[in-house]
Length: 208
Image (cartoon, rainbow, N blue to C red):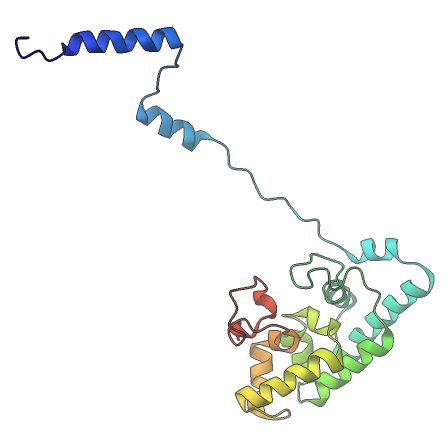
């Protein structure tokens, strides 16, 4: 053209020639690329094996197996659980299943009869009724049974009294524990400490 501008057809032919020489693959149409992305299979999350009472018994023997069976009998005799529920409660309470709660603080711990008896006695002492302890507390958060009385349970009960103004052996306290039994095992407070979320929400006061 008289203006001196390059001929568009010539530019297009030159571009095609350069692409051909370089061996660049042809670009798929936009719709084809979208279809390809949608067709890619989604990987399923890994399936975690469920730990059973039989799995625990296979790993324990002698005195340790005797301790497990004795603790099961306590849950059956004092709280009215059946043996299956008692085993499932202890599997989670003592770190035999997944580590979502304990985060390797407890890993396949063998329960001590004195500890289990002491924790149940303390929880009843602060006003939780026997049926509620089995169904509403340990039924929701079995890990409470694995919490030490002095370093975890008493500390959290004192925290509830101080921050929520509820005393043990009162109706409000009992209803609160039955509704949010997680509080008995809490060991973190991201909000009060001015921290970003630590990712341990099942043991954090910020959720309560």
